[in-house]
Length: 249
Ligand code: PEP
Image (cartoon, rainbow, N blue to C red; front, side, top):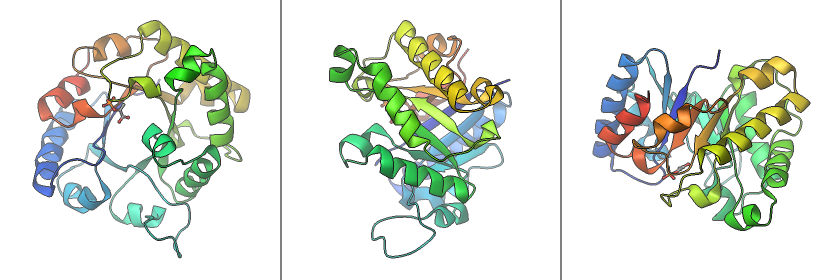
């Protein structure tokens, strides 16, 4: 019912040559795995280069998006610009945007709605910090991020939104959430979606896990009932480890 989805987030890495080579390798693996969807999110500057080699099966995403179609927004990239470059998806609310660049739920909601209005599928990232987890506030933080991030968003088609639970303390640290922690959070996200939308939206929206996913832990994570895929940073930067993540068992 929920087609597994593996997303590689390249962050601010790779030269154009490296990006082209890695995308070429990922495209081959994606073509060989028709039962799952594979997405790569290169830096904006590599989108045009990578587009030429993604083929039919590898989906192109951006790492962020401006909310307006055009205008005086120095440094921003609009949804139509991303569409023109072949992007079908976009990451919004990544923890690095929230915590390094201070994007708040209101701005993330604007970005998400702008993307959806222009036909891009947003991957809405949510997740608690270590201090929030230790204070017992994980579910309250997730709830606020979801309610505010999806403010004024109507959904009749589950294919138009992807959620990603990424505990901030697990991103780039090598410390993955335990299966129990991941499943608890994912179940909570799905329950909240069912409170906000029709039941079929909650049961069919894909919820990805992100945070130090790698070749060694992907199988265990993908076996969890409410984990429908992974958002992968570090392990998506090498062809071999990304291939193993895509080929999860
Ligand atoms: C990410 O970029 O969203 C991420 C989870 O990074 P990493 O896999 O390196 O922890």
